[in-house]
Length: 222
Ligand code: SF4
Ligand code: SF4
Figure 1 (cartoon, rainbow, N blue to C red):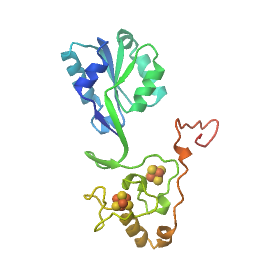
Figure 2 (cartoon, rainbow, N blue to C red):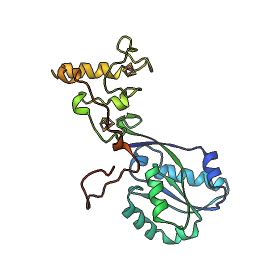
Figure 3 (tube, rainbow, N blue to C red):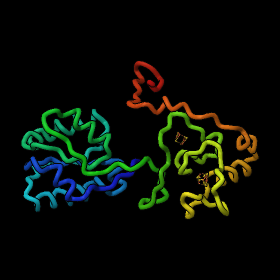
Figure 4 (cartoon, helix red, strand yellow):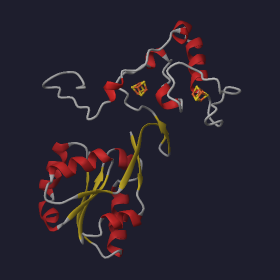
């Protein structure tokens, strides 16, 4: 899940200062589950913007704002209300805002949310960064614990010299990632993985923009 947070009303108001008629997109996927851009939040946002004197020409919660096909369908389905609007406010992650901005070239799309991280959920109100999409997964070598997201220094070989009583020197409230990795590998009788030196990652796999065209090739372009 992509974790998002709502921007302040002041920030949104500033972004929309040149616009009086706004169409709002919510997202039925991550932003609905995380309660930052589902139907209740869209309605709340519409009410706040009306208090600020904006006209809300319409709103919808798209199944997924990052899916161009679904956005095209939504735009066709809300043609009249969208043609009346002079801007979109999008309550989704940045990928959703970008998709809407690319599909409709007639009016600008503004983000109502900040995109924070790709998460694993502990429960519906508690999440933790799960993956930074490094393009070269090494969880098979680390007992399923990602050093890129769990160690603040992203160390591929650890621990560093700073851990104390099993806790991280950067954040003493959290266990050292490499102590966790050690314990997992020991439990699974895979200590040879712990002792092996991890080579530096191929950073070109994180070069932007990454893209995949499954019709053309089955690999990430770098
Ligand atoms: S190593 Fe970590 S950041 Fe890289 S793909 Fe695996 S989980 Fe994601
Ligand atoms: S103490 Fe452990 S988790 Fe913290 S920075 Fe050092 S190796 Fe990484």
